[in-house]
Image (tube, rainbow, N blue to C red; front, side, top):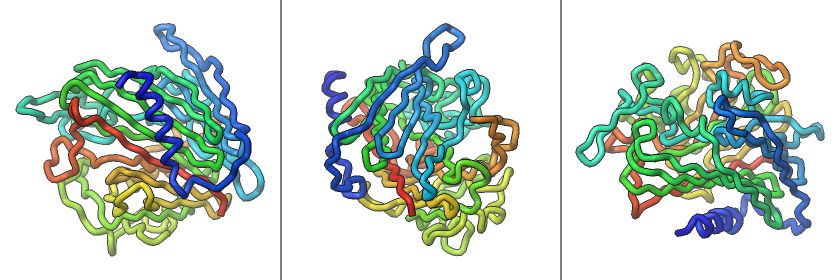
Amino acid sequence: MTALNKTAFLFLGAMLIVFTSCTTGRNDKNQGKIDRQLFGQLPDSSAVYLYTLDNGNGCIMKVSSYGGIITSLQVPAKNGNQIDIVLGYDSLKDYLRESPYFGAIIGRYGNRIAAAKFSLEDKEYLLAANNGLNHLHGGIRGFDKVIWKVEEMKTDSTVGLQLHYLSPDGEEGYPGNLDVTVTYTLTNDNCLIFDYYASTDKATPVNLTQHSYFNLKGKGDIKSHELMMAASSYTVVDSTLIPTGELRPVSGTPFDFTKAKAIGQDLLATGGNPIGYDHNFVLDTKSIDELAIRVSSPETGICMEVFTDQPGVQFYSGNFLNGSLKGKNGAVYNQYNGFCLETQHFPDSPNQKLFPSVIITPSEPYRSRSIYKFQIN
């Protein structure tokens, strides 16, 4: 498939398979627009651009070509205002200095790989140990730290960006040349669609995701947010957050979100160091047409629903935020000031034979979709 045909395939797919939950029946002429401006330069003088996508219906998203970072996402609230619901920085230099993956594309492998190594086809591959003894989010220079080639996209009912990156064979220790395309689509009825496609010339593990930190209040802690996840089990982890292989029922534990409850209700009972949620939940949903996650803020009325074709989601409650990072408009990000819902395959799957496979081949490329729908309660 040529790059042009692949581009058309991916973007048309994002348009044609926006299922019922993202279709309001509106036939309004698209008022959406896309703007591009210089965001800054990398130390090697490479230019970084910031794209502003406005769907004309109250959603405005800003995306950096560096890391595919969603730097801002404004959505309507019940008071009639727009609230920026993602954590981040005002300037590129802040992202370059220190960032806990705010808003970025994560790859080649989202989450952790034990002991920073895996074996494939009788060969052992060594990765960067950038999280203690383990490998995290693609290594020292993962997809969150590269410049993506960006193409603007617009249809009668959407605005979007297609981001492309070619990861060379051996980058961060992974085998195979990996040709990656990630498409961000913002519909005129306030759905944000993430489409992922990757092809390779060698068998290799792939687990792509998006690492936005959400706060549906816009500021403060997220303990009052009400969360529901269609997940009746989770992957038990050791002290370094590597799965033991056990899938444990959530019933009767602090990890039970099968019925909506405040994130803060059982947070202190989760244990960990620091205390909080940083676990992969095994989704019960079987298709992207089924609601996987629902989270809402009683204060603003903003509700986010998540649909995905992935088998799991990493729910992270911002445990490692400690007040040392100063974000947009001078905001200090303290513990539990943001949460992540990273749709994904399970952590350490390359070393866990009983987990769903993450290995792609030249004949079996990687495809994934997740949809985040925003509305007011």
